[in-house]
Length: 595
Image (cartoon, rainbow, N blue to C red; front, side, top):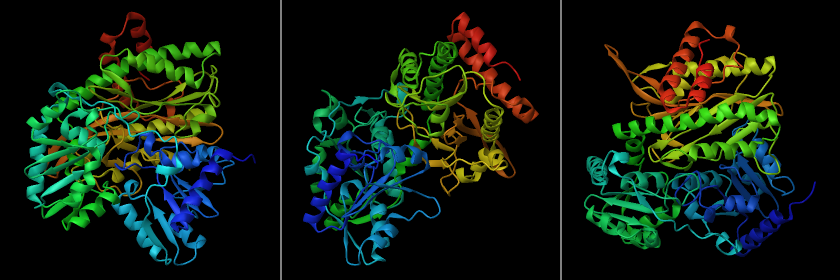
């Protein structure tokens, strides 16, 4: 095996730093001080130390070993990228895979000290680590940020300007949102809340930015008290007039680095710190003597339930996205016949078509364009070295999304580029059946995502098939494409599914080395009916794009399933038809024909 000298050299630097600090191990998560899924390059320390580029994973380095823990989305990618680094891949959540504390407990002698950076570890995670390690007689300490000195060409914290979301897009003013938050604080007898999650700050202030790849966010903290509020941000990011506008809304502005000294001198009796708060902030508040109220941020649920303006915006964004996708799908089946298209060139083509839409602000995540075997890599990202050339045969899994001022989109289609096998058709139909079953669900108030997840998996399970990722997640309104608190997963997710929430529906099947299939719509939860048994809800599709009919085995669909698909395709055609030219309308009419 060829050694990756760059990565092994970086690990050596870290081990020297650890030795000077008296540390037997150091843990590097994927997060930043704001617990974000996507991090600015400044905090991409786990990627820098390991070479692994996936969005989720934790690296642990001891004096003589190293490991990466990541989930099933990244098993194949991680195995490739870790080759030659000396970092062992641990497949998280699989039987036989030790947890990080258990692994360290077997590697390290009792009385060892393990270090973390308190700025990039959330309170709860740090405490869980500390408790688990203590069972082995191992001490956990916040040892500082080693990469401040080791990463000599480390990118700076971004300083991109913020911009305002006007009422025509936001639907609720910042003062009204602050009042709702303060009412919540008063109800629970808490004097303030510190927001660290960047999407919660952006939503509350009706501001957006571009500090985070694919997410219209800006690096900051927001302290909201019952009678005041303070935004902590590098002031160079504020365009002329923005600070004054914030002051008029009762929001003071201070430098980003002022947060710790201010928390150390916080004088109110209590402060709510959400789970996303990092350990460094927690320790700063602790030193002030303030009672810390640890609970979910009130903004999390407020933001998840979209107001009428946001819902209208989602419909507008989906129409725009639908037009771009129809033009792309019409183009690709002819384009692949030339043999010149690759996973990268089609990504560029889709971006070009989306960018022509009014209000387009970029993609909502890196496009996953996986042809045949690459489709089995759940979060595959093509590079110049890996991009496959497309042929007029087989399956292309295309998972993509866009950011519009009106809303955020997330869609997956598995596209039939030519002849496919009977096995591929069977698997495609099973995935579609699960997607339809979830789309047709009607459920009572009090239902959470875990209770509905099986609807999407049942047909795959019946054939001994399974997928390791969640079935659905919330989608932000011109915010993060992955939004909580609600999810559809096999593991217990207690957040209720409520009207106004968005939710993706994305079952799949992945056969390593052969192909992957996933079909995804974004949906809106809406009221269905009220009976003597209470309120019932259902899903309304937001995504507007044809589902490829060429791989369906019709006899495996029930009448109800065919009826749902035909109604959905009729909606796609009728909604998008006025926005297309004659040739595009004819193509769409054929692609949405009844089965």
